[in-house]
Image 1 (cartoon, helix red, strand yellow):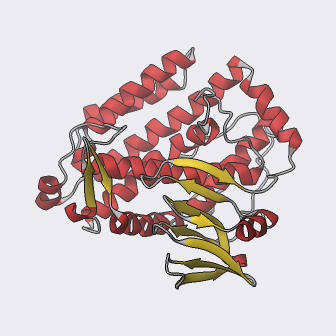
Image 2 (cartoon, one colour):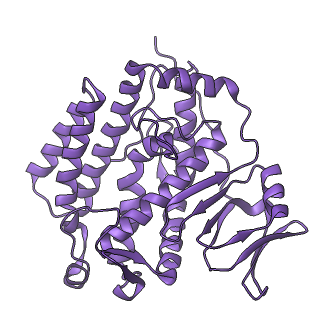
Image 3 (cartoon, helix red, strand yellow):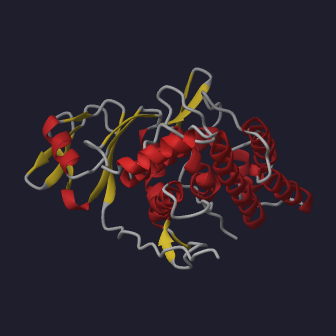
Length: 346
């Protein structure tokens, strides 16, 4: 008989991330406060260390050795992102001491059958959540929803990672072919034309927003994975590659539509982001500093939104749900749970 899932009590959301993106800024410590100063050494902001969940520095920002040491002692991660939003580094001191979890993670990653089972769950949840977003907010026909439902079902039965990768690609093609229907109003449709997903570099405004959102999501899941005790670089669906946080990319699949895509739609439809918030670099498009600032504010609002967890039945913020999913994955890998349950909404 299947045992009930042990109740999980998420931590409170009192601590919040600190973002620093002004070129030449410096992050330091004064007493029990984290301080951010501009290049002229004028104080920009400060926050009590107990209220800082992690620090995000973007571009040419300096962090003092005293700040790094204090944050590491407190287990507060520092994430380094490029000015374009790519995650390039993560420091959190010695990390978590859960050696048994990392041993279980490495053992599972070496087992093709276990990798496939977990990958099926990640991708099935992703496709179902993409379908939910289109069903709720898009102007799509029943044929599109049926096709995504069928692709999700086939993903749950895929016989290899290669087959699963193909199914994920087909689902992404269907989803992004209809993503433009989620842009509301004639003005949004005229201003932000979207036809297909492109990246490296993103060639239009909507794709620039999607890429930036996925970078922030990678950062948040990597932080949650490290908090739980995982090695974020060893995944199950995304195979190991130098410098790639494969586990973070695995777990974030479920949340791409629910968090990243939803923030993109929110800032466009609410006219928080406008054409003047973008700059073109060669063939690519990226947000300027003011655009990134507005997007990150919208991002944190979304991370604070509460939703009912399907397994536990209580409401919790998306920020905590990322951690909870990592903890559920840890329970599965260490033998407490027979299977990992992907996060989906209705």
